[in-house]
Image (cartoon, rainbow, N blue to C red; front, side):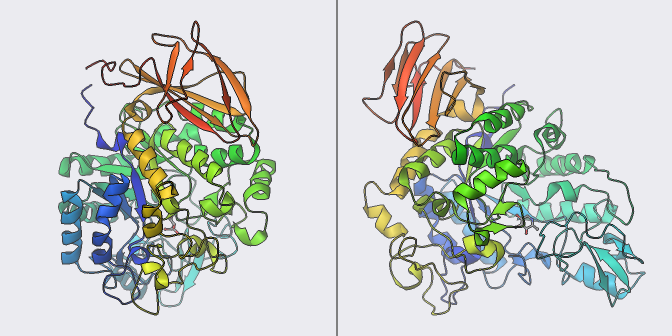
Length: 552
Ligand code: NOJ
């Protein structure tokens, strides 16, 4: 199949909230103009695709995931005209943009809900889910335990209860309603015309659920096919990336057996087991998740990530496994969230240890799929645990050592910039790291460059290799006659790994990052020692894959 133009397979995705990235107009709130000024930075880092978190008109009670108008840019961030200018800059630099599509629910301030709650006969009344009585299971399926008490709330105006999977100000849309489905595709069509390359779809398992008091669990996967069909008809290159934290065996339903639903899914099964592996050096669950997520249609692609703007959700680990991750990375209750996750930033979880950070990033950029980074992780930003819930890891980007980290000229930034000794903007900022040869920022730029030159990782077949060392993850990737091997030592002690490499060139492993790291084997057998938390990427048989890559 001639599918080598699927750009998302070898993309580098970078996720950011406009409000926290760069304030150009000096009102203390990040904006589209500010972001536009940072596009050179992002292109220079090697990012190829930005994921913009919701920037729509919104009361912002859930950081914009409570949308009041899908067609409007939040006035604080800019105007539709500024959005188009920003898109034009991005395109000039070859950067693609995907945006959040929050279609499971609206804000309670959305005119659809306002109209619906006022009048039982309003055309939009059935776009939401109502009940005269509060269903007995109203405390089940709460997404934010501790902050959310119920999934059914009484509305005085509507004189009925309405269903909300998330906070009470986010009434769920009835996505089985034909008019709601029309609206969703209309919104997609609007932003596609403005040049976006696709959507990160929020809360997909809930989006496709049949909702209502007392209804049996049922999901409508056909909606995903309809959305995909519409998307591709309007814009051949656009993609849908699902947020769906589901067990691996359900993922095929989201991709579609024939790849006719969503192209990409965030790989939650690997994400939580990766942190378990980093906490314990027990690779069993991670290996399981990699193998379980192996099978997928050719066009489908997993997106790997370390941290996102939400908590690190460990909900699918066993209680013992989860406790071990808490003990290692979030021992204090204030670092944990919703009884299932960790709300800290990556650098803080790893104790700002450069070796462990590099291990984590090397994994991110070499796990089989497409990597997604959270803004600020490239410089090792920390968190502010005095802020509530997930806000602690959503602080303004730290650009310089100037006041407010160079994020704003205003004295009243939308949120405090971190200013502690270890992670504060004077210690951690882009401009200093740009000038420091061995900074995390420059290191990240180099590994991204190498990653892009290793399409075996994103396109190829992969295998978790059997080796002699239980604490070392050994992956092999093969694509069009070129092969790559990566090794990661999860343990805090030196370890030796022995493995057999089959196939042509198997006697020579060329270390792509170090001139003196090559390994010479006999009969394909290699013995390699790795320092604590060390990692290596090797090309099989030759320093370059271009000549060895079979044309197709
Ligand atoms: C998932 C988003 O990532 C999260 O930030 C948000 O709170 C919920 N969906 C509700 O939209």
